[in-house]
Length: 246
Ligand code: IPE
Ligand code: IPE
Ligand code: MG
Image 1: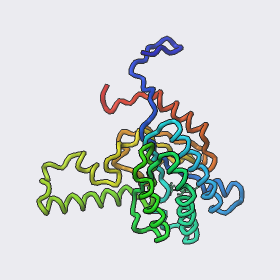
Image 2: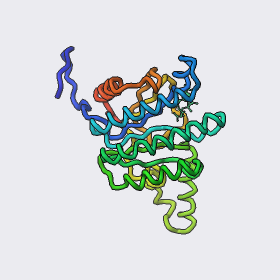
Image 3: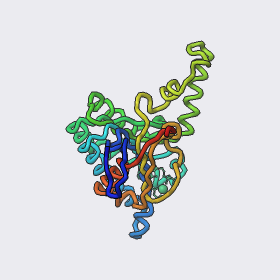
């Protein structure tokens, strides 16, 4: 039981850190534009923030960090920007390998990985295999990810199983659906952060965020810091998660 300064008694305060944090890393382009730089420079700076926040999550003991790095819709950006993002991603995977291993971090990817260029896919599979046994933290990259595409894939998957008689349609439950998504085996995010102020989900984890706490900050992703992240965690700790109950 906790007493606040105003004399009220607050019970059941959630003072624990989230197990699973998901982040929509937005605002790289605006960060660059503010500085009259090419958008690519914003993505490069954004990659540095990724390193900082991964490190921070590992230090404070977050179990899963899911980062929205590239959406299915992002394929519609100019080809030069897509190519630059793919190069950055391949470089990131190579440069971070040692750090992931040293810090016991497992890398996983969710999304339409088959659409990624071969060099990126190979770097990804290699890093995933290398870090497969790590259990300190799961770094989950959403790449070529779209929640609707994920749901379509899940429905097809279950429909085939029903047709083949592997499962009965009456036995389709929340758990059956969760187990047919890219995030199979992972708890749903406790906290979703979106940087750069947009009040939307942009096709990220639609099923999984049913009861996730949302925090939107105006800070652009390249400017996002460990300090602000800690402030957000503090804010999360004071929230009362009711899950529809009283
Ligand atoms: C987020 O930054 C990175 C990706 C979506 C790949 P943006 O590139 O969307 O930056 P803004 O929204 O244009 O500022
Ligand atoms: C969401 O950002 C996708 C990622 C951060 C990877 P966008 O910039 O693509 O989203 P919208 O276009 O503002 O909805
Ligand atoms: Mg954006």
